[in-house]
Figure 1: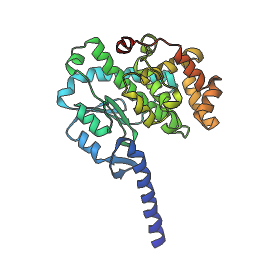
Figure 2: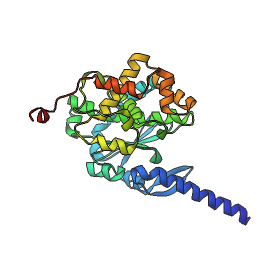
Figure 3: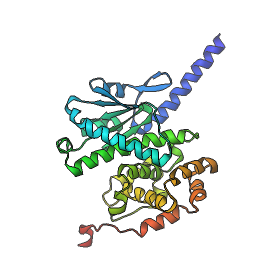
Figure 4: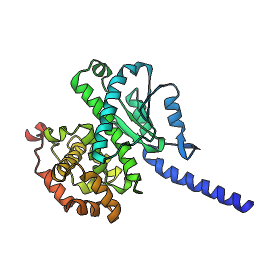
Length: 292
C-alpha cells in the first residue's frame, strides 16, 4: 500500500513540474487539475464575472459592455472555421474558450506580453482578443471591423494548428514560430494582405524567428514586420505548391524528425531559399531614415 502511494505521489509531482514548465510562457500559476486539464486561478478570475454564450464548439466569455461585438465575433469565427477546414482538410470540435478582453491592461496582465491584442493559451484551453475601438467595430467601420475579425481568425487558427499537429504526436515547439504565426496570419487576412501590403524597412532571416525569445525581440520593433514577413512566406509556399502544402509540411516534419527536413522533403527548398524570396519583395520606406 505504501509503495503504491509513493508512486501516486511521484506521478503527481511529475505532472506538476511539467505543467509548471509549460505555463512559463504566459506566467501563469497552476492551481488544480480537473479531468486531466489544468485550471488556473487567473482564468477563474477572468471568467467569473463575464457572461457566456455558446457558438458551435466554443464558449465565448464577454462583459456586458461588449455584447454588441458578438455578431462580428460569430461572423469571424464562422469564416475562420471555413478557411481552416480548407487549409488543413479537416474540422475540429474540441471545446475551447474565447475571451473578449475589456482592456489593454487586462490582456497584458493575463498573458505577460506587452502590446498584446490577441493570445492563445492551450494550457488554459482558451484564446483571447482585445477589441480596439469598440465603437468603430459596432458601427461597422470597415478597417476597424476587419482588424477585429482578423485578430479572432488569427487566434482561432492557433487552436486548429495545435489540434492538427497533436494528431501526429507533435507540439508547437516542433515548429519555428514564423511558420505557425505565418499560417495564422494567412487565415487572419483571409488570404489577401500578403499580396498587397509592403514589408517593414528591415527583414530578418527565418532562422532568427524560431523561438518565442527571438520572435519577441522583433515583433515590437517598428523597423520589422515579422507577422507580415511570415505570412508572405506562407503565401509563397501555397502559391507555388498548392493549398495542401501546409498539411504536407506538417506530416513530413513528423516523418523526417524535424521541421527543416520536413520543409525540404515537402517542397525541395530550404530556409535560405525562403530568405532569398523575402529579400526580393518591396519594402516600405522609412521617411526618417531616407531624410538622413
